[in-house]
View: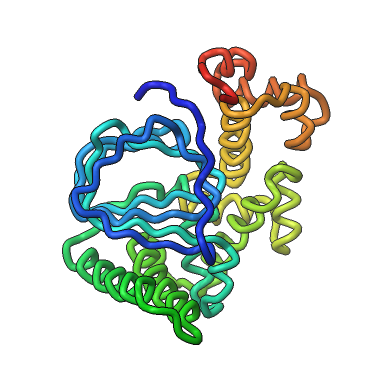
Length: 284
C-alpha cells in the first residue's frame, strides 16, 4: 500500500454513529487519524486495510478493532458488507459499568485484537445486535434514546469480547483482572511511565508476577506491551506531525533525544530520523 497523507477523523454527534455497509467501496486517498473507537463487522469483504503499519487482508466474516489514536486506511476498491460503528469515551460512559471489562480488553491494546475471525453462528448473533442498534440510531429522538443505544453497544461489546479465546477462562479471576487493569494503565500512562515496576506497584504485585500474567494472556511480556505503545505513538508522530525528534522524545518522557533515538532504533532497527525520511507528505 502506498504512503498517503493524513486526514483527521470527522466529528460526530453524541460521539456515536453506526452505518450499514452494503458492498460499500472505500476509495479514501488518505489515512484516517482515529478520534473515536471504531468497529467494523465484516460479513463479506475484499481488499486490504492498513492499521498503523500493519496490513491485513479482508476476506469476510471478521471483526476489525481500531482504537482512538490509531491511523488506518483501506486500499483502493476495498469492498465491505456489514456494519461500521464509531463511539467516543463520553458515549461509552452511558453503558452499564459491567461492560467495561469487555471494552478494556478489546481497545486498551487494540493491536492484540486488531483483526479477529468470527464463526458463522457468532456473526449472526452480532449482526442481530447491530440491526437493533441501527434501528435505535435511525429512530426519531425520544427520552433516553442515547441510553438505549448504549445498552445495545454494551451487548455488542460483550459478544465481541467473548470471541477472544482466553476471555472465557475465568473472566473475574485475579490474572484476568490484573491483565485488564494493566492494559488500562498502560493505555493512559505509557507516555509518562515506561518501567514495568511502576505498573506492578500500581497493581500491588511484583514485576515478575505481572510479566508472567501478561505473558500467559497475550504471549508478550509486560515490557513488550509498554514498548509497543511507545513505538506505535512514536511512529505516528514521526510520520504525521511536524514535531522535532527532541519534542517527540520529551513528550514521551525520555530524558534526552539520544535516549529516545536509542530506544526507537532498538525496537525498529532504524533511527527515528531515517524512519521519518522514508515517508512523504508528512504533515500535509
